[in-house]
Length: 259
Image (cartoon, rainbow, N blue to C red):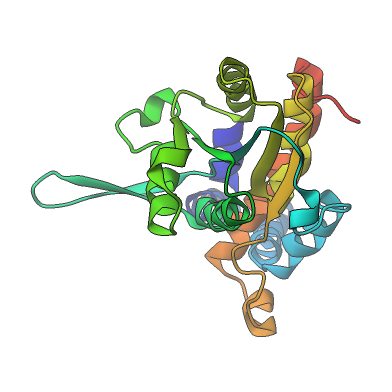
Protein backbone atom coordinates (compact mmCIF):
# COMPACT_ATOMS: atom_id res chain seq x y z
CA UNK A 1 0.00 0.00 0.00
CA UNK A 2 2.76 2.43 0.97
CA UNK A 3 4.71 1.84 -2.23
CA UNK A 4 1.58 2.30 -4.36
CA UNK A 5 0.79 5.63 -2.69
CA UNK A 6 4.40 6.73 -3.05
CA UNK A 7 4.27 5.94 -6.77
CA UNK A 8 0.95 7.70 -7.33
CA UNK A 9 2.25 10.87 -5.68
CA UNK A 10 5.62 10.99 -7.41
CA UNK A 11 7.08 12.45 -10.59
CA UNK A 12 7.07 8.93 -12.08
CA UNK A 13 3.41 8.47 -11.15
CA UNK A 14 2.52 11.84 -12.62
CA UNK A 15 4.30 11.15 -15.90
CA UNK A 16 2.95 7.59 -16.17
CA UNK A 17 -0.64 8.68 -15.50
CA UNK A 18 -0.37 11.52 -17.99
CA UNK A 19 1.15 9.25 -20.64
CA UNK A 20 -1.56 6.59 -20.22
CA UNK A 21 -4.38 9.12 -20.52
CA UNK A 22 -2.62 10.90 -23.42
CA UNK A 23 -2.50 7.58 -25.31
CA UNK A 24 -6.21 7.19 -24.60
CA UNK A 25 -6.87 10.65 -26.05
CA UNK A 26 -4.72 9.85 -29.09
CA UNK A 27 -6.53 6.55 -29.66
CA UNK A 28 -9.99 8.04 -29.08
CA UNK A 29 -9.72 11.72 -30.11
CA UNK A 30 -13.49 12.10 -30.16
CA UNK A 31 -13.94 10.74 -26.64
CA UNK A 32 -15.02 13.46 -24.20
CA UNK A 33 -14.23 11.07 -21.31
CA UNK A 34 -10.62 10.82 -22.46
CA UNK A 35 -10.25 14.59 -22.67
CA UNK A 36 -11.85 15.07 -19.27
CA UNK A 37 -9.55 12.41 -17.86
CA UNK A 38 -6.47 14.20 -19.17
CA UNK A 39 -7.69 17.50 -17.75
CA UNK A 40 -8.41 15.86 -14.39
CA UNK A 41 -4.90 14.36 -14.24
CA UNK A 42 -3.29 17.73 -15.00
CA UNK A 43 -5.39 19.56 -12.40
CA UNK A 44 -4.92 16.84 -9.77
CA UNK A 45 -1.14 16.74 -9.99
CA UNK A 46 -0.98 20.51 -10.34
CA UNK A 47 -2.86 21.00 -7.08
CA UNK A 48 -1.04 18.14 -5.31
CA UNK A 49 2.35 19.67 -6.13
CA UNK A 50 1.52 23.04 -4.52
CA UNK A 51 3.18 22.94 -1.09
CA UNK A 52 0.50 25.08 0.55
CA UNK A 53 -2.19 22.44 -0.06
CA UNK A 54 -0.75 19.62 2.10
CA UNK A 55 0.52 22.23 4.59
CA UNK A 56 -3.07 23.31 5.25
CA UNK A 57 -4.24 19.71 5.66
CA UNK A 58 -1.35 19.06 8.06
CA UNK A 59 -2.72 21.68 10.44
CA UNK A 60 -5.60 19.32 11.14
CA UNK A 61 -3.40 16.24 11.52
CA UNK A 62 -1.01 18.11 13.82
CA UNK A 63 -3.66 19.94 15.85
CA UNK A 64 -2.87 19.91 19.56
CA UNK A 65 0.88 19.41 19.17
CA UNK A 66 3.46 22.07 20.03
CA UNK A 67 7.19 22.56 20.00
CA UNK A 68 8.83 20.44 22.70
CA UNK A 69 10.26 22.46 25.60
CA UNK A 70 12.08 21.69 28.82
CA UNK A 71 8.74 21.93 30.64
CA UNK A 72 7.56 18.86 28.72
CA UNK A 73 10.47 16.76 29.96
CA UNK A 74 9.43 13.74 32.06
CA UNK A 75 10.99 12.78 35.36
CA UNK A 76 12.96 9.54 35.52
CA UNK A 77 14.88 7.51 32.98
CA UNK A 78 13.99 8.72 29.49
CA UNK A 79 14.71 7.71 25.90
CA UNK A 80 14.41 9.97 22.88
CA UNK A 81 13.07 7.82 20.07
CA UNK A 82 13.73 9.18 16.59
CA UNK A 83 11.60 7.58 13.87
CA UNK A 84 13.07 7.25 10.38
CA UNK A 85 11.64 8.96 7.34
CA UNK A 86 13.77 7.40 4.62
CA UNK A 87 16.81 8.42 2.65
CA UNK A 88 18.73 7.96 -0.55
CA UNK A 89 21.82 5.92 -1.38
CA UNK A 90 24.33 7.34 -3.86
CA UNK A 91 26.89 5.23 -5.75
CA UNK A 92 30.37 6.25 -6.99
CA UNK A 93 32.64 5.08 -9.82
CA UNK A 94 34.41 2.61 -7.54
CA UNK A 95 31.09 1.04 -6.51
CA UNK A 96 31.27 2.70 -3.12
CA UNK A 97 27.94 3.77 -1.61
CA UNK A 98 26.95 6.64 0.65
CA UNK A 99 23.56 6.90 2.36
CA UNK A 100 22.11 10.31 3.19
CA UNK A 101 18.86 11.22 4.92
CA UNK A 102 16.02 12.67 2.88
CA UNK A 103 14.44 16.00 3.84
CA UNK A 104 11.91 14.42 6.21
CA UNK A 105 14.52 12.36 8.10
CA UNK A 106 16.86 15.35 8.24
CA UNK A 107 14.16 17.56 9.76
CA UNK A 108 13.37 14.88 12.35
CA UNK A 109 17.07 14.49 13.17
CA UNK A 110 17.48 18.23 13.69
CA UNK A 111 14.64 18.13 16.20
CA UNK A 112 16.05 15.03 17.94
CA UNK A 113 19.40 16.79 18.34
CA UNK A 114 17.65 19.82 19.85
CA UNK A 115 15.68 17.62 22.26
CA UNK A 116 18.89 15.76 23.17
CA UNK A 117 20.42 19.08 24.25
CA UNK A 118 17.37 19.75 26.43
CA UNK A 119 17.58 16.23 27.93
CA UNK A 120 21.34 15.64 28.32
CA UNK A 121 20.91 12.41 30.29
CA UNK A 122 18.44 10.76 27.92
CA UNK A 123 19.33 7.81 25.71
CA UNK A 124 18.70 8.36 21.98
CA UNK A 125 17.32 5.58 19.77
CA UNK A 126 17.73 6.19 16.04
CA UNK A 127 15.15 3.91 14.46
CA UNK A 128 14.47 2.90 10.90
CA UNK A 129 15.23 -0.05 8.65
CA UNK A 130 14.55 -0.95 5.03
CA UNK A 131 11.96 -2.87 3.11
CA UNK A 132 13.22 -6.26 1.82
CA UNK A 133 13.48 -4.82 -1.69
CA UNK A 134 15.80 -2.08 -0.37
CA UNK A 135 18.12 -4.32 1.62
CA UNK A 136 21.19 -3.10 -0.27
CA UNK A 137 20.53 0.51 0.72
CA UNK A 138 21.67 2.25 3.89
CA UNK A 139 18.93 2.09 6.56
CA UNK A 140 17.42 5.26 8.02
CA UNK A 141 18.54 4.45 11.54
CA UNK A 142 22.19 4.44 10.55
CA UNK A 143 21.98 7.55 8.40
CA UNK A 144 20.23 9.53 11.14
CA UNK A 145 22.74 8.30 13.74
CA UNK A 146 25.59 9.69 11.63
CA UNK A 147 23.75 12.99 11.25
CA UNK A 148 23.05 13.15 15.00
CA UNK A 149 26.76 12.72 15.70
CA UNK A 150 27.60 15.51 13.23
CA UNK A 151 25.11 17.71 15.11
CA UNK A 152 26.95 17.18 18.37
CA UNK A 153 25.17 14.23 19.98
CA UNK A 154 27.65 11.87 21.62
CA UNK A 155 27.82 8.45 19.89
CA UNK A 156 27.84 6.85 23.35
CA UNK A 157 24.25 8.05 23.87
CA UNK A 158 22.88 6.60 20.63
CA UNK A 159 21.42 3.18 19.94
CA UNK A 160 20.52 2.22 16.37
CA UNK A 161 17.53 0.12 15.31
CA UNK A 162 17.75 -1.11 11.70
CA UNK A 163 15.36 -4.09 11.64
CA UNK A 164 11.97 -2.34 11.32
CA UNK A 165 10.09 -1.96 8.06
CA UNK A 166 7.30 0.38 9.18
CA UNK A 167 6.07 2.39 12.16
CA UNK A 168 4.43 -0.65 13.75
CA UNK A 169 7.70 -2.58 13.61
CA UNK A 170 9.52 0.37 15.15
CA UNK A 171 7.14 0.48 18.12
CA UNK A 172 7.42 -3.28 18.73
CA UNK A 173 11.23 -3.33 18.54
CA UNK A 174 11.73 -0.12 20.51
CA UNK A 175 9.47 -1.42 23.28
CA UNK A 176 11.77 -4.41 23.75
CA UNK A 177 14.85 -2.17 23.74
CA UNK A 178 13.35 0.05 26.43
CA UNK A 179 12.13 -2.84 28.54
CA UNK A 180 15.59 -4.44 28.53
CA UNK A 181 17.06 -1.18 29.84
CA UNK A 182 14.24 -0.45 32.31
CA UNK A 183 13.54 2.91 30.70
CA UNK A 184 10.20 4.34 31.78
CA UNK A 185 9.57 7.37 29.58
CA UNK A 186 9.68 8.07 25.85
CA UNK A 187 9.98 11.34 23.98
CA UNK A 188 8.91 10.53 20.44
CA UNK A 189 10.43 12.55 17.60
CA UNK A 190 8.88 12.47 14.15
CA UNK A 191 7.30 14.76 11.57
CA UNK A 192 4.24 16.73 12.63
CA UNK A 193 2.16 14.97 9.96
CA UNK A 194 3.34 11.54 11.16
CA UNK A 195 3.01 12.17 14.91
CA UNK A 196 -0.67 11.31 15.42
CA UNK A 197 -0.34 7.82 13.90
CA UNK A 198 2.99 7.24 15.66
CA UNK A 199 1.57 8.04 19.10
CA UNK A 200 -1.35 5.69 18.44
CA UNK A 201 1.01 2.90 17.42
CA UNK A 202 3.18 3.34 20.50
CA UNK A 203 0.06 3.42 22.72
CA UNK A 204 -1.04 0.12 21.19
CA UNK A 205 2.27 -1.32 22.44
CA UNK A 206 1.70 0.05 25.95
CA UNK A 207 3.90 3.14 25.63
CA UNK A 208 2.50 6.61 26.26
CA UNK A 209 5.04 8.83 24.57
CA UNK A 210 5.55 12.58 24.83
CA UNK A 211 5.46 14.12 21.33
CA UNK A 212 8.30 16.25 19.96
CA UNK A 213 7.17 17.26 16.49
CA UNK A 214 9.63 18.15 13.75
CA UNK A 215 8.38 20.93 11.47
CA UNK A 216 7.84 20.45 7.78
CA UNK A 217 11.25 20.70 6.08
CA UNK A 218 10.24 23.83 4.12
CA UNK A 219 7.89 25.41 6.64
CA UNK A 220 9.85 28.68 6.61
CA UNK A 221 9.91 28.99 2.82
CA UNK A 222 8.66 32.10 1.04
CA UNK A 223 5.02 32.39 -0.04
CA UNK A 224 6.10 31.99 -3.68
CA UNK A 225 7.77 28.66 -2.83
CA UNK A 226 4.59 27.55 -1.08
CA UNK A 227 2.36 28.45 -4.03
CA UNK A 228 4.40 27.26 -7.01
CA UNK A 229 4.20 23.59 -8.07
CA UNK A 230 7.24 21.64 -6.94
CA UNK A 231 8.51 18.16 -6.24
CA UNK A 232 8.66 19.06 -2.53
CA UNK A 233 4.94 19.82 -2.64
CA UNK A 234 4.21 16.49 -4.32
CA UNK A 235 6.32 14.64 -1.74
CA UNK A 236 4.52 16.45 1.07
CA UNK A 237 1.12 15.52 -0.37
CA UNK A 238 2.30 11.92 -0.53
CA UNK A 239 3.11 12.06 3.18
CA UNK A 240 -0.27 13.56 4.09
CA UNK A 241 -2.23 11.00 2.05
CA UNK A 242 -0.09 8.23 3.54
CA UNK A 243 -1.26 9.30 7.01
CA UNK A 244 -4.91 9.77 6.02
CA UNK A 245 -4.90 6.20 4.70
CA UNK A 246 -2.49 4.81 7.29
CA UNK A 247 -4.40 5.75 10.44
CA UNK A 248 -7.59 3.83 9.58
CA UNK A 249 -5.52 0.97 8.13
CA UNK A 250 -3.46 0.66 11.31
CA UNK A 251 -6.64 0.84 13.41
CA UNK A 252 -8.17 -1.96 11.32
CA UNK A 253 -5.05 -4.10 11.86
CA UNK A 254 -5.19 -3.49 15.61
CA UNK A 255 -1.92 -1.54 15.51
CA UNK A 256 -3.36 1.84 16.49
CA UNK A 257 -5.04 2.94 19.70
CA UNK A 258 -6.56 6.37 20.22
CA UNK A 259 -6.55 8.25 23.52
